[in-house]
Image (cartoon, rainbow, N blue to C red; front, top):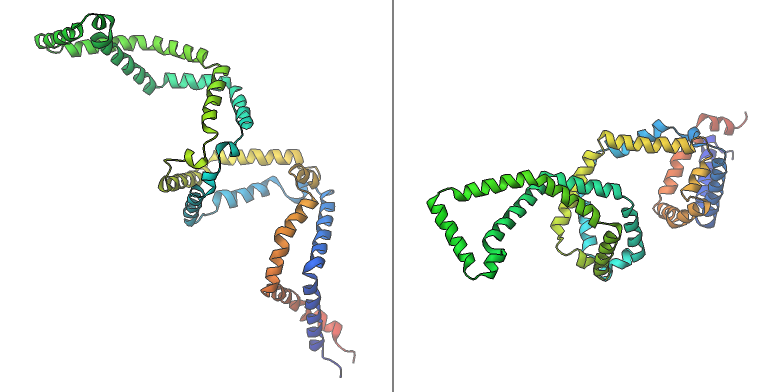
Length: 344
């Protein structure tokens, strides 16, 4: 009995689905993926970055997915929870600082920081010129002078009862001349105000001379020696779950505003422009090789993630359903009916 075109098309569809399903598992699937990866890398030797995409396309992806994409409120909450789990993990108490950052690495960081001598000097100058620091110096000098005059000078220390007599005389003078204390304080502070620029300048010169590379290196490494045998948990003492979560939220809020700035956009633009200037007219495999991606690495990740995922999708029935959705339209098409139509 001759089959109608619809019956024949259905039979072909079933056989096609079975064929595809048998190839989507085990060694067959891995071999097929490996062959395609090899083919793609072969095309990567001929295709250039400029041919497959443009600067505007890459910047568009960054702006859509990094800058403009709305982030759900659950993200900072989840991040805070994860940070808390990390903070309270057993590994914190079982890991020493030197297990994470070696002495050699610390030394290398210190040496690099010492190269930034100009920045160090500029930082010292900025601190010295800050009004808060100047007020601090003024108050320290004032309190030191007052304390020295009435308590700690050589006369009051050498001659018994002189200190008490000076304090008594100060109280009597204040009674006889009300406001004497205020006048003395005002004049002393006026003198300090006039002398402060010189004091600050000498302090700055002293720091520049005292904070030599050798001194800083010895100081930092001495501090490191006291910390390297302490656990990460010990170094985190005082940082509770609540404080950590607040820092995470603050960091998240900063990111939301920072990503909208012209500065962030300018940095991204500079990176993308340089990427295309360097690799735009070169084969794609050059870019992949420079970032450490080769066929072996791709297949390693396929074995680790892609093949197990395909197994799950096949077990769940998704692969077969997807194949049927894709192939059914073809086998029901007019073109197939015409091919299968028996000749009259």
